[in-house]
Image 1: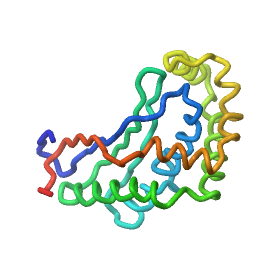
Image 2 (image 1 turned 90 degrees about the vertical axis):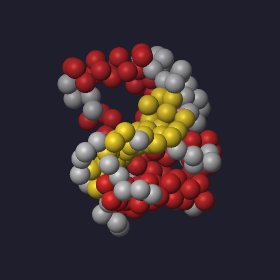
Image 3 (image 1 turned 180 degrees about the vertical axis):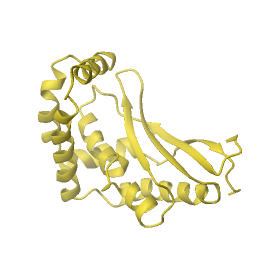
Length: 183
């Protein structure tokens, strides 16, 4: 905790992730999308923002390469509600393990991930950034051509395996900047 005189606290939370060259990595991308992958349909968005109004935005992402891989989440919220938000986040991590991702959630996530990828490649600089990220991540350039087929091959069973590996015991490393009320 770093104390800052601010009306809101910002929290970054995370845990180890599956590496990009692991066969379960694309299933982990689907898991991340369902958990907090930045859309209005994610479990964290629904539980933390929609149901409880604890934040404006909450999202998670996979920062993964062959060498270092992590699941990272972000939220900013009022100081007096930060620990309530953290409790809900931890609860959703546990819920992901005990209440498996439905077949419908898997298919919606796959559809979004495959459909949105081409939209990210709309400029020369976006293509160059994607190629650089691919190279830095330790992947071959043909990964871009294979990506959607790999996502399409994800099943509910591979997602369940990825949940177990990605979420594990649910323990989170948490960093807070702000002046949250005591927990």
